[in-house]
Length: 156
Length: 191
Image (cartoon, rainbow over all chains, first blue to last red):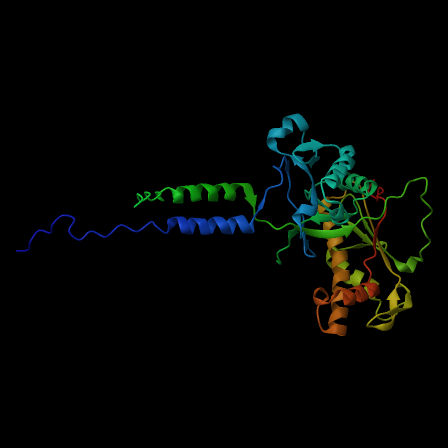
């Protein structure tokens, strides 16, 4: 006859959680270094077009963004479904672009101003009419260096 | 002897770190912004606008995109798949074809005297053209010039264009300039 095993006699020792903070801190630092803050909350739906000849936007601090696309569902009641321009956190008209560029320029250092880039984030189904208007406004405000934001095309 | 200070409990450290981690996960994005880089021409007042310089027809590569996103290249329907090849052929003109652009002997550092093309690519789109199509066309045209530059740098320096130093890049750029002109948009076909 065998003996009954004593309860809790050979229990596994609990896993030590002393290193948990270190692991989590490591993850935290990884994310802090490799990501950037979101600039704005999108109020328009944007699906970027695809391209192959991409160049990266090196310095984020030099970039001003212009978003164009259909307003998101919750804004469609007020703003309709026609593609709209979004500057910072609000909808804007084509006429506001010059002021926006001037304001962006004012907020940079004098030395950095010639290096500024305007990034156009435009939905691929937008008509060129609105894009052309934006380009004309950018030319008027002498913001000639632009970047048509696009996704990397994956080979089929 | 002074009393020993009690140890700070570190049990909550993990929770604090988790909270920070989640905050950063939510508020940041990982995507690297990239896109097609272009330069717009200077703004010219309408009163100052002069008649366009006369450019010989053989020196212009006309690309039209209409409202139905169809492509008209040099007066005939074309597919976007062939556009890159045709733009390359136009800019390089390897056999000095009569119908392709003229060349001009120019002194270029590293290369000596070379024949530089006078070709200009003219892109015109309709106001109702889809932006996606426009970018696809731009992409092919930029790609054509990039490929020509790459081929030339491989041939001359044995390196790709991006690995050259600044002076060498300038020399290559002089031979294959990025001359893509965008005319003021007009209605192009298909009322």
